[in-house]
Image 1 (spheres, rainbow, N blue to C red):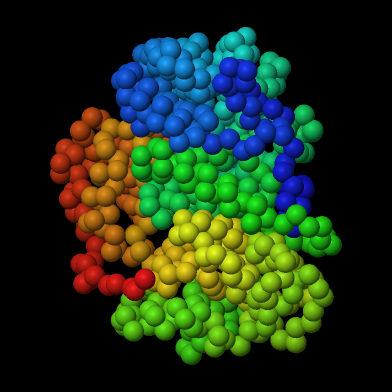
Image 2 (image 1 turned 120 degrees about the vertical axis):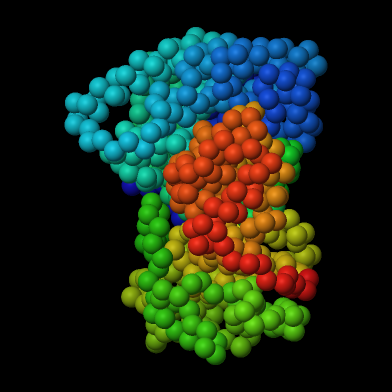
Length: 593
């Protein structure tokens, strides 16, 4: 079972074309030989026609090619008629996607007015109750029949009207039926989507694409790989396009790094036909990151033919590569079960070391020039006398880092050696230093993709020229990849018309009160659509329950209800105290740039 043509050489996955509107009149073709399409989503109330039009025009002005608008009710779906009519009257022909959760009747109404409908298999015909129930094969088949009866009318309508469909599975909102049979797993995500795809095919409707979103980049990567492999198994005519995205990525550097790890690693493997970077920021900023990420792609992929080797990693299930634990520097060790370490060049160490205090979490753990390290060319056979030797790829080998380090791990596996590996974000230095935006994205993709493969025991960031920035970037990549926890972790949705409070303002307020809580994970969700599921591995959740009212969660369990928004941040702090996770803030630390 293969998810891509080669883990060593970039080859775009061959897909059928999905038409989102009429290409002759401003529509977009997704898949086939077309370039990767960028898209985003409005953050305003769908009943506010003027604001929806304004936000759409703002997105189109920065290059957004598809715009999504939520339609939580039939009334909202009906207002799409006025939004689309006003856009067309202004000469804006961008395809509009209606985002549907829970209400098939809203999808049926929206299909009259928009070029594409997005449905979530986990809640289109189901309501999530976290119920535990055993399903016999007969009972499961009966559930599938019930779902088909709910979904088939939409399929038939989309086909008759020439519309497109996105089957958008979310890790946080798998149905109880899927959860009970397949668990909270990539397989469950894929099976959920495949069930709806089979209904489409039964009615000879093929103008659809898939998405497999999660707030955890490693889960998201595994889901898309498994889906691509399963589609290939089903046959050549199952080559439907893929929409890539990390949901609830958050804002700032953290949101960009999470998105770059998930989206970028899959693009480097040739998967993905359209992308969205979901940020808790103004939507036009998402398009800038999409374009920056796509612009970095040629420098991150290999086009050269390489001798095939057996990869060292399982692409569908994360497992850190097994290595012995070794001494890295002084009393600092790496490999084995030790967290992935942060190595810096001597020049960076000399700048930041004078400002590092005892107990600071963001600190160099070794200096590259001081290490006993074997620098190897993974294109050639080599021998290693001791598996306790730290190894890396030598500079200027003519391969991008992802390919080079995958190849190094594969050659070590063939030798039967489990040497710890130091990853580099760059195998040489750029003639002109990268911009901070480009350096962040390239480092996140190169290092994050390998860490998601389970490869790497220490990392070295060199593409970012600022000393303090490169050190922070290394730790932020490790946190986003789930390899270290040195600060509070946030899961924050990007806002839409369903959101019941100002996500940007509230997220900033919560961060101001809690960003010093090392190892605590807080979910900030604008509504309940993906809330409980995406919060399943969060310690605490802040969720919009009604206009002006907030519900607070511990894990996926609601604990406090209908708290006035003005009090909710402090009540969240109180809840963290009650569960023994609160510590007082220490004086601010600074790291030189």
